[in-house]
Amino acid sequence: MSEVSQLTWDKFLNDYPEAHLLQSRSWGELKSSYGWEVSRIISRSSSNHELASAGAQILFRSLPLGYTLAYLPKGPVIPKTQPAHWSDWGKLWAEVDKVCKKMRSVFLLVEPDLWVADNSTAEDKQLQWTVPPDGFNNSMFSVQPVRTVLVDISGSEEQILGRMKQKTRYNIRLASKKEVYVYPSDDLDTFYQLVVETGGRDEFGVHSLDYYQLAYDLFNPAGECEIFLAEFQGEPIAGLMVFAIGKRAWYFYGASSNKHRERMPNYLLQWEAIRWARSRGCVNYDLWGVPDEDEKTLEMYFNKRSDGLWGVYRFKRGFGGQLIRSFGPWDRIYIPGIYKIIRLWVKRRAVWMLGT
Image (cartoon, rainbow, N blue to C red; front, side, top):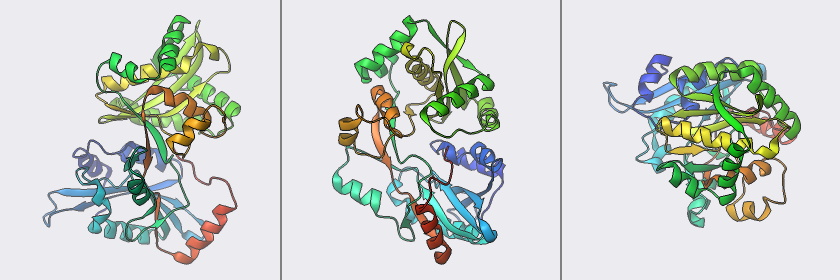
């Protein structure tokens, strides 16, 4: 069994700069403060344990009667040179199984960090989206968004703006003309007030202030997180929290006041976050979550629907990104009888786990 310390995990990730944020040590620390237990596993490719080949940061959540749910978000961490063969890392899965069984896990939910573009062939999408690897089943559970918009932020600022839709470029410039000022900030209280206001208006759940504060405290000192606030005449009217590791950045949390929305502060906020990500060396900016529909359907209905993630798609589509969908999610089942009970329970209830 190859469970490792936080320090060893950090050293392992140094060889995988493209690993997802949700596999970082800091993300594990964040979730461990909010009801999850963390285990980090490394499988070695040589008998003398000198070369690490694959790893997984797994989160465990307590269930009744001493059982647990195991969750592998955006992993495992494997060489990206052979992404199609990620399920062939048998030694890693054997070690994952040992840890999950020790923790009395009913099942392991895996949301891999592997994506397929919406313009891929129908045959590729059918295979990659619906056929699980050996040892896994298709899951009815989904914690993170399965579809997102990935913005290419390589090249010059003019090139990035040129890939956006004309209306989005217009709104970015309009916000500046309308005296919207965007700046980095460590004012979590103000950011949280905006988050709560947005959650009440758009009817979505929010984390506690302490949660956002801890996320900021864990990632910001390493330059991996920033909060941007937008204000008009000294009054904060919008904000976002952006993360960056390696060459990727993620927009996880955003908020806006009910006031001065006509000044388009969210467009300028995103632009400044993109500029910050570029300064960190990022080439991709993940807008993190749109409705799980193909592009044709999204384009047909984005002006007609505003429920769920439809409203944010209308906003995010303008930044000129590529629509992509993740592989999975998949379940690795350890206790079939209890797993069936959990599936029946979840079918009768709303979303039961918080994502990001």
